[in-house]
Image (cartoon, rainbow, N blue to C red):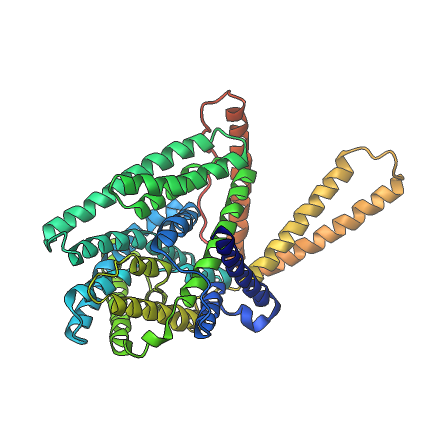
Length: 506
């Protein structure tokens, strides 16, 4: 059995990596987000009735979900969460409520689906999965606020959706009664346990990583935090998803004093883990489609899809307007349109559906509706998000920024070479040769500076990018000195920065 499972796992991994290679070879394929390519490949295999692996709820909820959530939370800047706290909270919690209610009412009143079944479909589809959209935002250079809102909502929405699903499933199994006060109290309880335990673990491990000098140990601690937090919070009766997100946010933001090399190593390690897991999950999502179930359940699926899209519109435009009025968050109608259309459903929805006992009334109908709706959002909405961004003029010229940074990097490299030639003795080099090298390099450096100035004059937005790069360099230099004192045992913890650095939005 172990040998057979290993063969299946290697087959899944080989297919995923083959798709990644194809995406790099063919330019037209590169325009499609990698995760959506995996879903398409999975659907293609399913059409041939090729089944790679049997997805189990435990595999996704325990093995796959914690590291994906931790990686996203660890890379999330706390300042962005704080600045957009109100809209993120409204979208995450309000979106779950509107989705569950909207889908349930539509299926029950329009399609005649029993209320319990309709509630379960709504609960499964209340979890947004914006992994594909976030990757697309980074590729095309979407605005900072738009990316923060989408990523922040997705993080906290998953926790709220899992909690809501647990409550609805208890009702469907007859182990609970439908009481608004009890439901709210249960929601607050499991959320509080998740936040409390996650914050405690995140703070303790963040403090510990500040005193370490081993990237391998720090990376191991983050991996322990991802899985350990989930297990501990679930054992205590809380939401493991919320616990993991809280721990990841604290470790990623409080542990920033670690040496830049350590943080870069951890970041790259988690990027690999996220790539590895997403490669498996999204391929298996498409592979789980059973085409014989599509036609019989197509009418109810159409209703579910329409309800998801409409409830998402109410969430984004309605709650976005409230947020603009209360907190002056200034979410433009264009940003709201992308947030509405980019609210995809994915691995979390599938995992929740798979965790429903087969004895629940309407099990087959629930599975068909959830899988088909997830496929619709991933494929149709996912593939049309990039054209929508370009239509609304919400993309930046990443190639321009890259060219500008390349010029700066070359200038800094030549300046370092000049410093070496002018400030150190070179007895083995003839004086006229040394002077000729210095003159040549100075000319090249001056030419680069002229190109940099020309770009700045034509594109003033690049000045903010240069300022941010400069500030990051100064901050890294200052904090590296404090870290050396901590590692030598002269300081108990790194000091706060003294440089009057102000954040710059790019």
